[in-house]
Image (cartoon, rainbow, N blue to C red; front, top):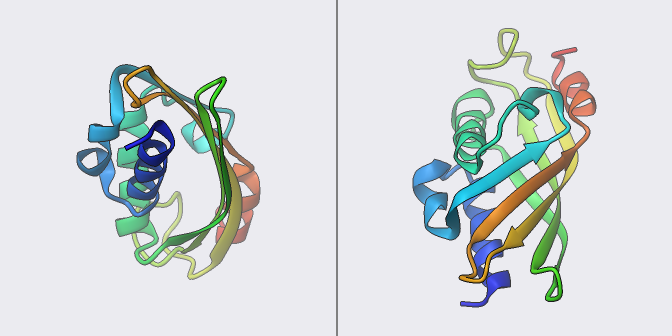
Length: 139
């Protein structure tokens, strides 16, 4: 598989709540995660983020799904971009308040840099978290 194929396989596994168990095969040792989004800003590892996504998509908002709007790969920087919309309804435990029954349709971008072995080396999530929080009734 190519670097872009592996990046996309990682993206799909993460977005379908497979957790670290379903994502780690695509991720290099010593990889990093960052985001300037309040609920996930303190996370530094891709493992932490994958586990957070799995809990959100199976406990807090079971049945959550994504729409992939666009994707691209820049061979010169070995970077894949995935622009999606995350669709979720807060019906389970795990949010900052009891289940609200409210929905979010939140846009986001993954920037995934691949290493020389075609594994995820660095991931940045670009996401307007306050928007999603308001839609879910959390703010």
